[in-house]
Image (cartoon, rainbow, N blue to C red; front, top):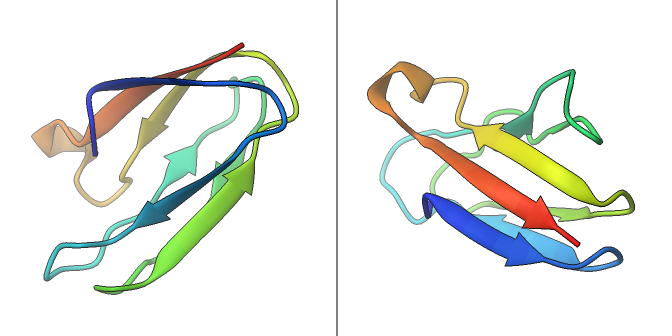
Length: 75
């Protein structure tokens, strides 16, 4: 997961677990929109179309304490 990225409203982003262990893609409450991929096994994908502009803090809930987080700017 990159540390920082940008996209625009209406864009669908697809996250692919290219690792050999389970991860999540989660924007918790307090974000402009909330979503949670649930557990993504290796090779699985999760897509989300952003409808609201703002700054999103996205985490892997399993590995957040290890720094697996990103900031996404949606314009």
